[in-house]
Image (cartoon, rainbow, N blue to C red; front, side, top):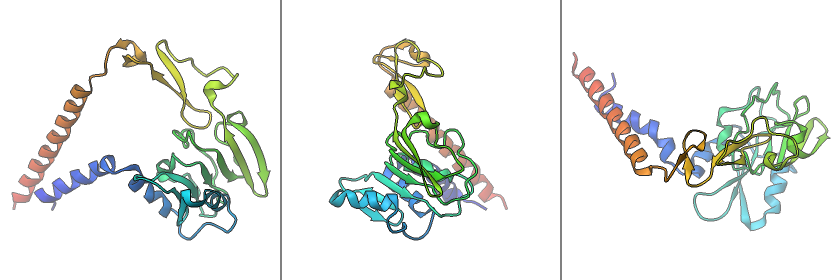
Length: 229
């Protein structure tokens, strides 16, 4: 049975991903597939081209510099992946990503949400590039892989957006073929209709109060259970 200390540790584990720097959380995605990148793979070539600005760590290529480090490349080729791994979102800062030589059957919508820096992506040949060919400057075939190169900014495209951004907002890229509408200062809220400074103190106070209340509730509940014979 979980005691009071266990309840507190459980709450801490739930909050831990929100408190860790991106590099620490992003490190988990490097362990999705064991081994090292294949010699001459697109990720290894990219990392080598960065010279002293980057370093390899397993199947990841990290930017050298101040902490938290940025994940520049990820090689998940030939990893027997049947679906897109849920931890892939941790690599959203990557410039190069290799998913080739995997039995992937689909790339669900939103798999690359937030991948605004991605410029080189390799996927199995049966799959299309995320966002379609219009989302990339160049789409080619290399053996059993499809290469998607040069992500286009959908906000600068001549193709009309699926839905226009509301007044007082601007379009911003949010991944291959994806975009988001960001409120212009000083507007915020639903459809950017509220004007003025966003109440950060009020928002932070409500969030902090809810977190503390949940922690105390779990602590009290588990403590009573622990005392029950």
